[in-house]
Length: 603
Image (cartoon, rainbow, N blue to C red):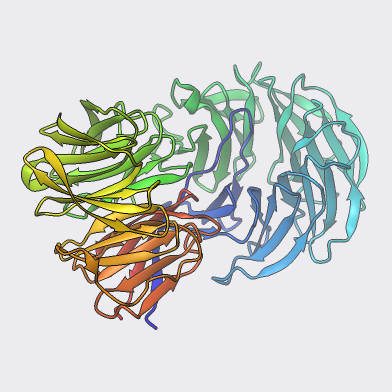
């Protein structure tokens, strides 16, 4: 059995939610930072964020992940109140422990400086937090004294140990121990407390709230030292992070700015204005060695420049919603991905560097994407076909209206004709104008065009592949091919010798062209759920299929009884699209918002 290897992961951005702070974790060695999206924990190299790793062992959405002070472990907490502690050294990330300290979503986690104790807080049914031993799960104190869910917690990094918590009852809780007991609440905030963090030496801690205020307290006595700014921001403060020397403080706010403060004078040193739209609200920040990060509501990760606050050093972009379309430029140097929320990202296939496509796109889900020379065409559920100017990375003004929602499209480049298959018709578009249409009484799911002008359209209601002939700008029905389930995708091979179709009955079926007869007596039926998508290698020898069962299977035309299965290719998430970069490199995208590159060994 031949094998495969994962070459690259172009990672999802953090999943953000309006009004919810996002917690970033940092590696004590200063190399990586951490965040979550869906069931995944994403570990990214801070120097080169194109290098990333994804931990996918949670069965429910994860809210927060934090490195242990030793750097050898990561603790991640999920929606149900479960904490997994896993190692960072092995590629397999071996699970060390799993505990269930509270009965509801975990919102923050903090380790004691000796790696032995841990505090978790959130929205439990019977309690909002718990302190326990990281080795055994034994309780070492109670988090009590606050009447509403707790958003944030921190462990004092030096003795005498303290724990502070920030709650939706507008208070800060202070706990002394071990064993940790409630000592007092601080009531300086007038709205939800969103973040509490100790300084690196433990001599101070800072709190940030939705009242726009940031306070600094004494780390031992918890007495109020003073307020930062007056107030610190014109909107809710979502995050606060200390500089490594403890002399400065970074804050991020819903007022779309991040600000840098001098701790001693509590005055502003600089302000980073990160945009003017709702999507530019700043929901998290992290000061990691020489790097200052702030995360926008859009999910973009901004690297702030201490020497020039006018613009970030770099902005890491991408997707944080499921990816629905994938295509390559004709020279295969760039990968285009489009997500459920209508955004398109253009990735450099060799470095992973990316940029979001500018201009007015569809504004909602994109269902098809295909290149034509220096243009990339997209169709979306706003019932239109639009085009992207690849070189300038922007949507053009071209907007071709369709009669109903498009489900798939393909391009006959020789004649500059686009075929768009919509809910109740197939449109023929030439030179960016609609020149013909054929009303259909089935619901198309996909379309593929062969170089000779045959057109295959998948039927999702009638379980058929419909083959048409293109005469000028009109379509004539040629033949129908029956499947046992809804046909989800169709594709002619690059050499035009085959057509492959996949369906909801778990099958991938190969036909020889032009007679449209079964090309193999070998049934390609190893998926165990609906097959969503298929893609041909450029040499027409391999077909890749991606399914709802989270697996990708590679099939050989020459050896039809051989195949390679990439199990659980996108964690607990279905595969939405596939494309080959070359004859041995496959690109996949999924519901988990990640783009992955696989090397397929010959077989």
